[in-house]
Image (cartoon, rainbow, N blue to C red):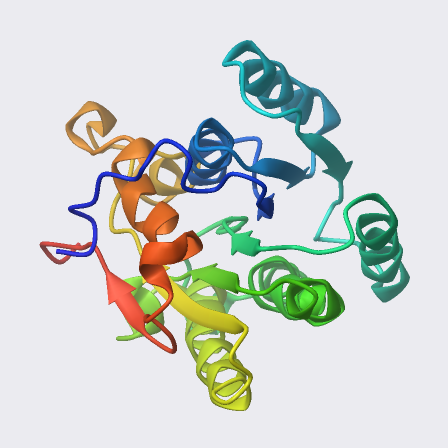
Length: 251
């Protein structure tokens, strides 16, 4: 299995990897693990205080010093993404990885009852922000010999389900974005692009959707990390344009 993987300790040495949603849940777990395997991680998230916490944890682990870039995807303008890319170009020159973990759910609702403001905010965070960030980072990814873009998806973006509304639609969009970009980069030889459905994990987003669920019975976000590391590192270089799932049962 793709997730049955033990990464070498130096797998991501000298890599520069940007992780969104890095202050919580899956993004936090991926960022900390990437740093532990040698990467300089660029931590992107909405809340500076939370980013500073994971920054301190990474430094405490003895991993390479990370960088923090607070960015609120819900309201960020195109210029802010361009400014972020400019800073990354000056500070790092290139990226070897871009991992999209940030996501928003807000609520479960019938399409009949969805208000436009909520719909737009969810699509902005879950689909438009990954598009814009990937677009401005493509020159930095191309400046690397090998680079990996990972979009975090969901089974709900592959088979629609009632009441999941804008969240499900955004994940369908992520799958489409990955497929289009992967096809455009098919002959590029430098950038590989994939999506991962990590399955149900012990995260805030999951508890929002299932408030009565016993979260202690769910896998920790760290359980999905080996696959992310594999796709980021040299052992994932043959994997491109794939929609990968770690889900063993339907939810």
